[in-house]
Image (cartoon, rainbow, N blue to C red):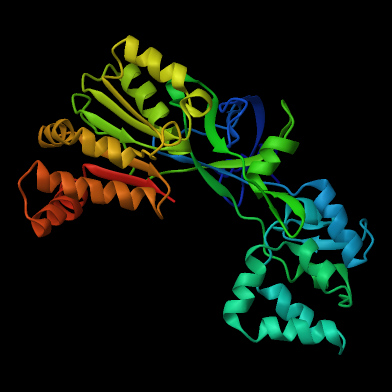
Length: 391
């Protein structure tokens, strides 16, 4: 046998199946006291990971369940916390697997079927079967419940083993967040802008899986947050730095524009920048407000239009600001500007889209059909100057 050292295989790139364990190095509140929201700025170290990203990319983050929630589930399931189980990552304990491997804050449909197989005849079984036999009722039932709610309600059901219970659960999946930093501006760091999800159902306070983990559990300077970079194929800065860009993003949808502006400044881009930002109250919810105003003073942000919906009697949103500035916006678009929108897909993005079509009609003199064709086909598909990161 040769005495020569066998070269070790290169490490796998960090990915969904092989995330990097990152260190949280900063955690700051963006919303101020009195806000109806809790939006925060998180900074992770990428030191030693080799991970890189480009403005427009997202960071995938895996959450962990709150220990108190896990302990309540264990008590209701009736098993030993230290019972050995085989989880997705191999041999571990029942408690450890519940902490890191399975989603507990949202129930799935599967658990109802699993309970139906083991619950004895009686009132609880009859109640369960009424839920299970009606798809709409089942969807409504599980929409607001977690496993504590369900195991408490159907307490007569007893699974035969910890692994039989785990088999009913859904694995934890990563949550994608638009990256709020340009890597050259923050070497070995990645920044996120995240709104913490908190709500109450069935008499209990609850949190989002990842947002609750980052806000309430993640410790500073502990390398234990699984992440990887999810590259964007389409949400990209214009290749030509002389191109003007219009950035529309209410709430946390403003995150990628912080990265865009940082990158364009470093690149010496000569194109103009226009930010259209919306939130509830200027005094408490102007995310990165000091930074935007500083960029404006320095001439890096050429236009800033804000829509603080609750600061006056009638609600004003970003699409209203677009209509108010319709002539200027149309001029920018006709001169080759890129238009970006980031944020809520269900309402905001649709309203912004409709506002663009209306502007094409009023300012471009196009018929309704021609305006829709221009926005939906020419701008979005042919010229690829209308880019969306909506969720």
